[in-house]
Length: 123
Image (cartoon, rainbow, N blue to C red):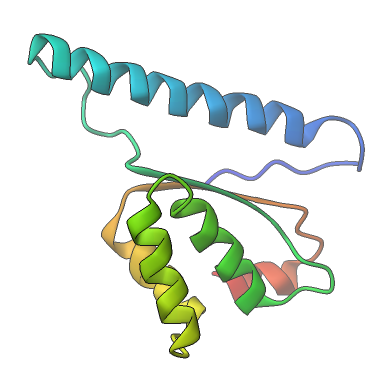
């Protein structure tokens, strides 16, 4: 886990977004190359899922969990519709998010966190 913090407005999110996008692009390129030449050139420490969520204010863990899940599912329409059905059936987004994070190697960016108490709830 890595945290980036500092005075508001100095560009923390821009730096993190740049690294985040770079990692996703490298991952996609390596998957493409692996498929083309049938050789794995990556050390498998890579991430399988990515999510970026802005923290709701006032803080709400359920809302943050939905935001993370929506971003995880953004590229998979079948998974997105399954998640929507789960929402309608009263599925707990916090538990679903926890399950997802346990089952996948995820790079998650939580942007805009304002307090240690909110971080403790997330952990």
